[in-house]
Amino acid sequence: MTSKAAARSLILVATRKGAWIYQGDGARRTWRTEGPHFLGHIVSHLVLDPRDGRTLLAAAKTGHLGPTIFRSTDLGHTWKEAARPPAFGPAANGLEARAVDHTFWLTPGHESEHGVWYAGTSPQGLFRSGDGGITWEPASTIHDDPQYRKWMGTVQDGTPDGPKLHSILVDPRDARHLVIGMSGGGVHESHDAGRTFKPLVDGMEVVEGFDPAEVTFHDPHCVRYCPSNPDRLYQQNHCGLYRIDRPATKWVRIGGGIPKEVGDVGFPMVVHPRDADRAWVFPMDASSVWPRTSPDGKPAVYGTRDAGATWQRMDAGLPPSDAWWTVKRQAMTADGDDPVGLYFGTTSGELWMSDDEGGHWREIARHLPEIYAVETAQVG
Image (cartoon, rainbow, N blue to C red; front, side):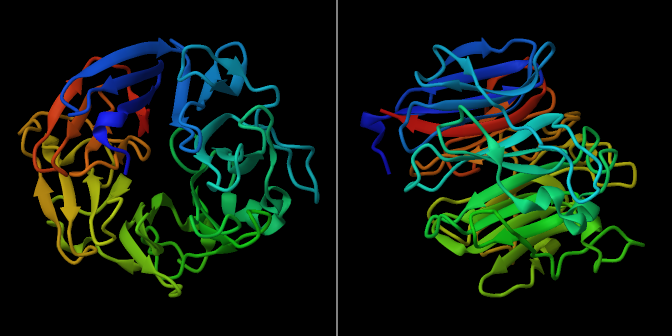
C-alpha cells in the first residue's frame, strides 16, 4: 500500500453530463475539484491506469462524434480521442450487423501487460487495446458466435439504456484468465485472454417464470474478484447476492441475512482489498415496478464481515428518510488505505464517502449530474 505521505488520493467521477476529478489530502478530509471534463457528454467510466499512475481513459458518448474513448497521459490536463475506438466488424455467420452504442466499462490489463486495456460495450462486445487505449480491436470470438449472440438477446433487451458487457475481471495471477458479465446473458470465463468463453451461471436464479438453464435470462449486475483471494468472487445479480469459491463452479446465494423488507437486490458490489470475507452492497427497492430508488426512501449500505453469512446496516450520516435515489453498478468503490475508504455516487448527483469502512458517511459533493461511475486511485 502506498503511504499517505507519498500519495494523493483521487476520486474519478463519471456522470451523465461530464466527468470530475477530486484530489484529496493525505487524511482524506478535504477534496479539491477538477472539472468538468467533457461537459455535456455522457461519460460511462473514467479509470486511471495503476501501472503508470498517470494515464486516464474516459468512455464517452458525444453528440457529434458518437461513442468514443478519450485518453490523457497527464492526469486529465489534456485529452486526445482514440484513433480507433471500439467498433464491431462486418457481420459474420449470417448474423445481424451491430453497431456500438456506447462503451460502458474499462479495465486495465494485467500488470505484466503494459498498455493493455479491455473495454465492454453496449450492445455486448469485448474489445482490447495494446497501445494504452489509442486503438481498439475486437477481443473475442463471442461477437460472431451464434450461441453467444442468442444469449446476448437483441439491442432492445437488457437494461433500460441497452444491454451491456461489464465486470471485465483480469486474474492478477494469470493474464489469460478473464471473467466477464453480460446484462443480460450471464457470467462467463475465459482461459485464453478472452478469445473464447464458457458460461459460469450454475446456481444463479432468474426471474420467476423463466428457465435458469437458458443463459439468456441470467442478469449479473456486477461481479468482483477478491483482491486478497482471487479464487473468491462476489456478485450482485438481478436476483440477489452470490459468492463462488473456485474451483467450485456453482454460485451460492448469500443475501438472506439482509432484512426481507430491504432485500438483496441492487447494482454495485465492493470487496475489501485485503480481507476476502468483507464486502459491501447498496440495496435498492426491488418491488415489482423496480422504481430504482432506495427502499422506502431510506438509503443504506449493507456490509458483511463473514463472506455473506450475516449483513449489517451501515447508514450513520446518510439521510434517514425522503432520499429517493440509488447507486448504479459502477458508482461505488473502495480505496486501498487503512482503514479502507468507501465511496459512492447517487442518481441525484451526490458524492458520499466513509473513511472508516462504512461506519460513518459524509457528503463531499452535491448537485452533480446523475453519477454513472466512481473509481479511486492514488498518485505520487
